[in-house]
Image (cartoon, rainbow, N blue to C red; front, side, top):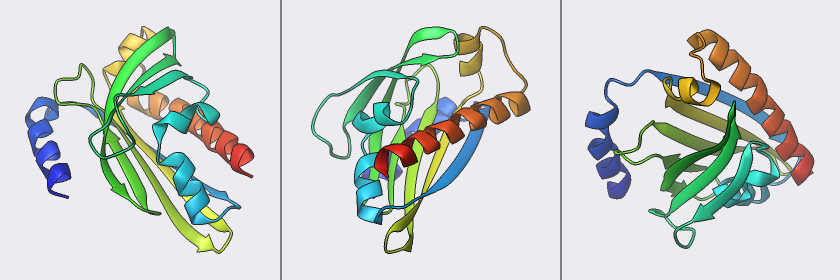
Length: 167
């Protein structure tokens, strides 16, 4: 917990004036919470459900503090590179990733699970990213509402992919 708070405080000055896009989507998956959590907590599994991922690499074992480098096809950018660090990990609850304070663009990914029944789990996927990132990936700045709506549709597809993969 101390590591999370310290890293958040260190990052505040750099991203304090950044305009963020916030999108959160959820889906119910007919699997036990531990099975869903064990898959979504690790970004190395993202290529099974997030179709934009070309590749994902880790600089170490799956532990808090490990940095993951994602190469993704986002918008018009075939190889958009993002580095996020695992900052929080609570078994069968959540995993939280965020870019470093010196990153060009802010990005965070929160993956949460909650048990509905023994074999039903709600997965909530939340991303926040720097609005300016869209200019680089799309070559045009869309209105925030359009960007939120369109990427929300893409996130819904990702969640459906995950459900299909896990069920």
